[in-house]
Image 1 (tube, rainbow, N blue to C red):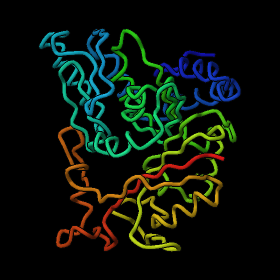
Image 2 (spheres, one colour):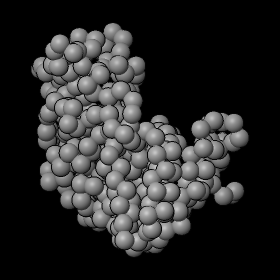
Image 3 (tube, rainbow, N blue to C red):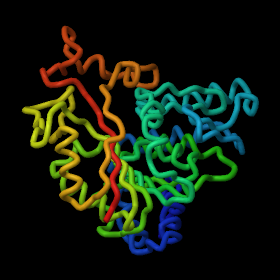
Image 4 (cartoon, rainbow, N blue to C red):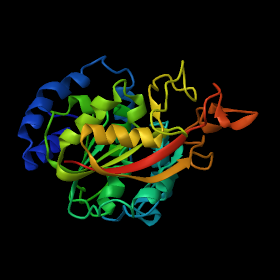
Length: 329
């Protein structure tokens, strides 16, 4: 097999360690296509940013804190720190975080630590568990999972920029952590692996044209008794109530189904999950999602009605999110 960028060879080796060689063999065949010349016009720029990072190495990491930290300011010169900041900025926009690399604080669009804080004490302890993180973004949550004691985390997300950001965060570690991101969606994961102890799907379900199929796929990756941690947009209401946006929702094009919590619980039960629990339901605030120097595009405040922040710019209920836990049969 030809050498793949972003240490994807190591990810394939990790799948074989998990006795998922079939999936690894499949990726050996399909992943090289993603990196063919001209396939993604931004890829050369992202790879150049990684190559131009300063030569630093550290054994300091803090994965269990709200701000994921790699290295310290004392381990690099002022010049190296400025070089690092410049190359990290070249990987704009940074959506999930926050991170700190050798004293450079990356203030991401989402305060993802707030979401993690709402769930970390309510799910099954991750210590020693094998985890699949679906829609993992740049790996912030995957690293927090490792900080919570997971034995291995496999993240899947087709966005190559997120993969480059993850590489930027982790490439300086002297002792790499067993967290591996693979640039595919859940639909490219073999069905019925029944291998993972915990599966996370956060911020994905409302982007699926068939949410029930997504839930079936999540059930299929879990061993019997494994836990699904699901986070998605919801609306107020009871059983049978679902918002299907006429066009965009909060300026997002690809939003399909936003159920009430009661309806979402029914979906999970129909798919076969048991012990379904709603862990948290909260309205997203501009303190949690906002524009920053590291994400300079529009954010939540631009998606809401300027006269009524309880409604989106399109007139629907403002974004509200629920966290649920369910157990695979």
